[in-house]
Amino acid sequence: MRNTNRYQVNKANSLWQIYQTVSFWKVMKNFIVIQLARYTPFLAMKNWLYRTFLRMGVGGQTAFALMVMPDVMFPEKITVGSNSIIGYNTTILAHEYLIKEYRIGKVVIGDEVMIGANSTILPGVTIGDRAIVSAGTLVHKDVPAGAFVGGNPMRLIYTKEEMEKRMQGDADA
Image (tube, rainbow, N blue to C red; front, side, top):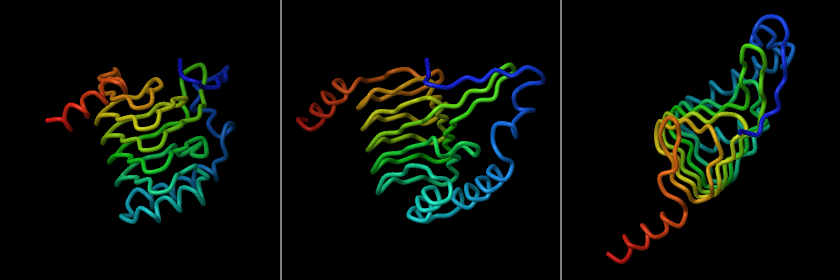
């Protein structure tokens, strides 16, 4: 199970109660900053916007590709390590609004992680150092360090040890 905090709601679905969980002005500010960052081609500027205005943890030399969409409501719950790549049009969520409850959870992406284009990362997930997430993956559970995962639903393709053997075999060839 993902590591999220769950909050029950009583009346209408949880999205109707959104501004009881997060400030309207915070969402507006975050939306504007995210839209600027999504379209800017300058990686250092994106990282500065994310760190300064959204309070995301972003390591050095991390690259957010064009159109990456961090969580607009709780971006401060997202941490990305150093020298990682977040692929084109990837969505990183730290919240889920459901019918009878909403959930909020941290997303931790390690160092030297590669996330392929059009992936979605759900709240409460940790992706270990040097993991690879193939394009179009729905990351719905933790990814071990050094693993290669992909698909929808996500599945383990290679463990760290299998990846090291493959890399060693390629180097010997």
